[in-house]
Image (cartoon, rainbow, N blue to C red):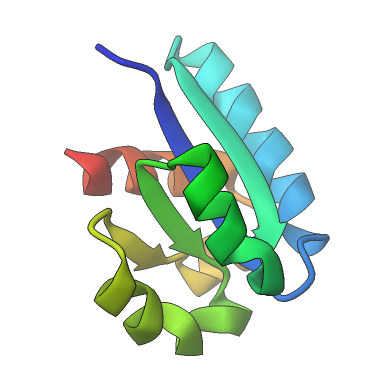
Amino acid sequence: MAKKTIMLVCAAGMSTSLLVSKMQKAAAEDHEDVTIFATAASDAQSKIESEHPDILMLGPQVNYLISSFKERETIPVEVINMQDYGMMNGRKVLEQALKDMT
């Protein structure tokens, strides 16, 4: 199976960096071949064009952007569950992303 790329988007790109590392740890434990990175909402479009992610996961604080991304993108665009985000539950967010990509 080809390597998948998961892109997380938040207001400034800072709060999701901890979530990215927790997701990477869960992916390593599960032997999932994924690339996971976070970016600020203001940089999201250029990152989509340069990184070609397989899914876009929006932080709850930028969920208002979902319709504009869904209009422009052909990849799945999802909002991260607020509780999983608040608890920084990297495993749950990873599982959500992998499920939404199938």
